[in-house]
Image (tube, rainbow, N blue to C red):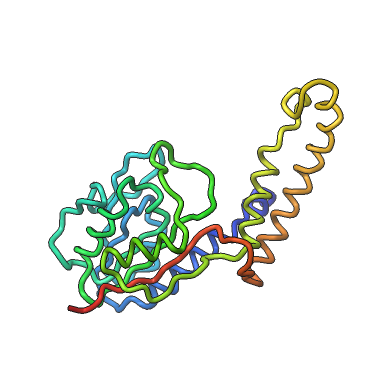
Length: 235
């Protein structure tokens, strides 16, 4: 069990948790918060000082917490300006019409209300078939400002160490080791031991780079995710 926990280390999840914890702490007590695309509602405990509601379409084959609103995020069945704050984590890559969703989130957020956004730039396809896009910082700025939001912060969620760790983890899991899968004929038998060695090395290096990420955020190369903190301007 402890070995599994070590090899499931994930600095991106740690960064995501810390960013949401800081955002939740900034939300005033008693505020009404929407968790948009809430899934299993992992951040709900952070918002115990608030009133919490959630929305999700609940169509992916995965566990869900009970949503307040089971709906498409482009059509949330609430009145205008209902929420003081919104959590919008790891969701926008899964919506086919992001402009419609951002317009809807803008509608249901009160003037002066704030939102946290996170989504991947570099990540494998997941939650198929509901995985449509990856977003650069320029796409994030274009889409959110186009919907009317003010961008207070737009940043790498994690540094390049975490991106490297993720790719090494994929190598440790998916590099082929059967000779016939590595390469045709004799070349496959020659390279298969090297692939096996590489998989073992990548597994160890994954842990090293996750550990380094939590000690130094290196803003070079490219990020795995972007984070934005946004405000709906007061009228």
